[in-house]
Image (cartoon, rainbow, N blue to C red; front, side, top):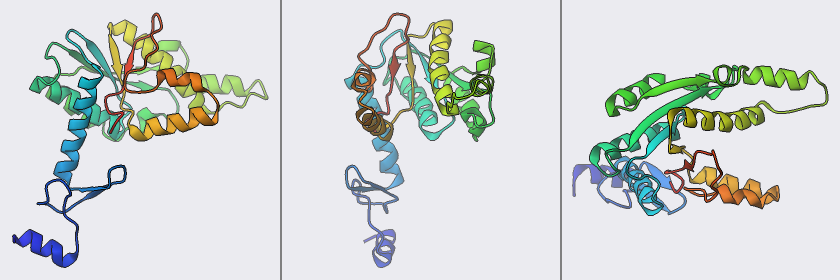
Length: 233
């Protein structure tokens, strides 16, 4: 028995369910697995690639926009799509571009993005152009302007997140048309999908299930299709 295994046994540290060679660092509730970091990262890559291939999310000649919020999910998506293209696991002729949206208020996701330097690093490493757009540039107003305009009318109590969500979805479509995108990829994962199901059921808004899944079935004229490669992760 190796020294590492003997130490782990003495300290009662569980071993990785998959490889059985390294100590587990992560417990996956959905599968009951205890995974080391190597097996965890490989399982994420395998699942995202499986989703892309099973649902044919990306095809030859696609121009895919990657929506970057600055969180771990969208950054992981940017890394994986760049890596898959380089390895030829998705067509090498696929054009990838990344973008972020600054809503124009102090609580914007853009200002909470702690790793702008990492986005730039990924952009250079995988040859993925990256640009920041603003609500001011797209709509002529910021989210703060819209919120204060509504609040000043009295009796209109709209949360800033609602304003952000509605305008951000519209902004993504405008950006997509400007860039000639065939698809927009987002970092929505399995937790996000589960929350969507629960909210739609509780609000009795079952029509929204048409937009559910890694590749929504709804096809609207002028709407850039969204894909969610990490939706089973």
